[in-house]
Length: 215
Image (cartoon, rainbow, N blue to C red; front, top):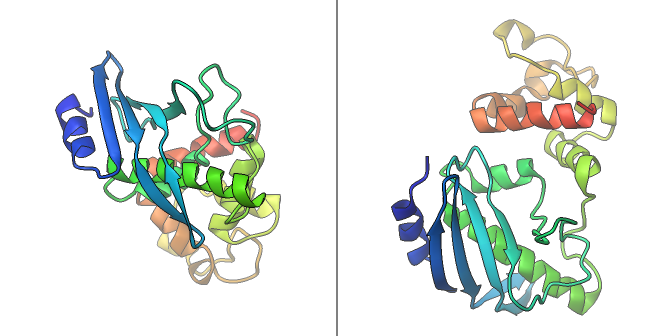
């Protein structure tokens, strides 16, 4: 369980933030703050001066925070705002986020993801294109994330790799589940090993597989 004192210590050490307040609830810690920073996106610099609220579940990093703009909203008419009552930011798939904040899962990394999100929004508004390409939402976005992670092209390859339930040395010389015809040890053994060695990523992959199969 993450504690309020730990959260305060991490946020007070961050540059580019103007902290407003911390509120502790039964299951979460809520922070209100202003961004007052410059973010570099694809060679262009953008000032981000947004007032946001972040809600950090006390079981972080098992549960991930949500974040949204408060007061007068500057991020409008943007496809990466979730269609919920708060207008939460779509910062990427949970897999994307978890891989960006590991291995220490520091909240400073999560704040950097938020800052990058706001910078990308300003880049998009200025140039009309996304600096690093765009990803779909929902299950399509999850599928794209695993295609990128596994470096494969078909849905079936993703499904086959996500269904691997255990890694045994006896599997190493068998054909890879992705049907590449290459031995497992020279194909997807390494990336799956990194997932299986991280309980949070393994749990996320199982959760994502259930989403993709409609469970």
